[in-house]
Length: 139
Length: 139
Image (cartoon, rainbow over all chains, first blue to last red; front, side, top):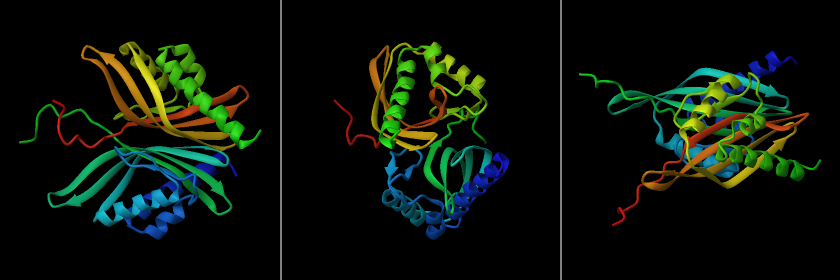
């Protein structure tokens, strides 16, 4: 398989991960992951969760606390050194709350390993992107 | 080489990266990195820098602005899928300023690729760890 074809596969696996989270579908989320002890996940501002049991509990808590969530993935870049690949990107996350929709940006690194059944996520590191304050507040 | 031996090598490469930053030694920093277009770096709160030219400019700016800096690496974990490895860890960073020393914690993912001359960093993703406020301020 060419590197371009592998990058296409990896970007598809990366999108499936965000689709699972948008759908609040824990079975689809689990299918995206390496469910062994190597799994590691860090949510914005938090400490590392390590091993699938901790990582799964984190996603369950997020899904239980989330109503609507949508991910637009900006500037994704996939690099492949077979059988490992990693995607760096910016997640533009839209959520809805009592004040209406809000958008935040999160930087992410997602490391995937290829096994007999496809590319599986082994590291997800997500962190806040901090923008300069606007010069003036909207009226 | 056994996986344990590789993990030991990768943790040593990870420490050399922090040693280069502590020493404010740009030549040592450059020796730690894959200096091609695949290099990617994200400093806490910032957006992605991609390609060695952007990454190098970022380190040069940080080194120019830094006096004393020290890294204690907490809970480093290395996973190896030859020829790729990644370290997840918490950086306890001590800096000195006019108010005296201060300590912050930063979560990091460091992805390394093994080439003919050793393990080289290809992704560094660093992000703030946000701790709950203390129940009371010190007197």
